[in-house]
Image (cartoon, rainbow, N blue to C red; front, side, top):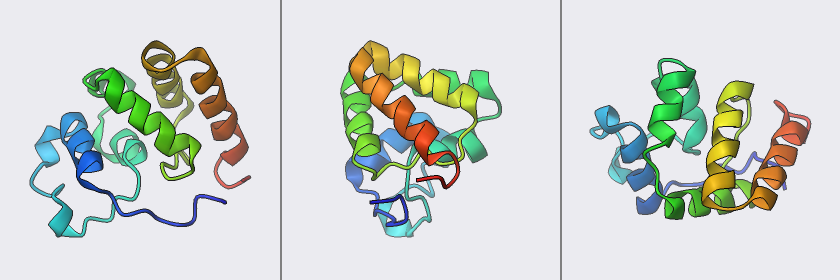
Length: 119
């Protein structure tokens, strides 16, 4: 199972995206057919201005949101792909706080294995 099977974002995904990028709420409705297949990479790579902005955005998410995102990442439905290392570190800190140290370690291993196409 590699990250090539694009998932369709559902209402929960869009709710999280709206927290991360409220300025994009107009294009982030399920009917728009927007090309986002993951949540975190487009925010990291296209929406956030820099790593501080990204950290502030992901800080808006609840522990429940992080539990959901962690499940999506570990199941291969949320692809962290080519996100910058510093944004991955930010995500790992949030997962450690909201979910568990073990979950953060699993996400970190997955990221390093997938490293822009190794997995």
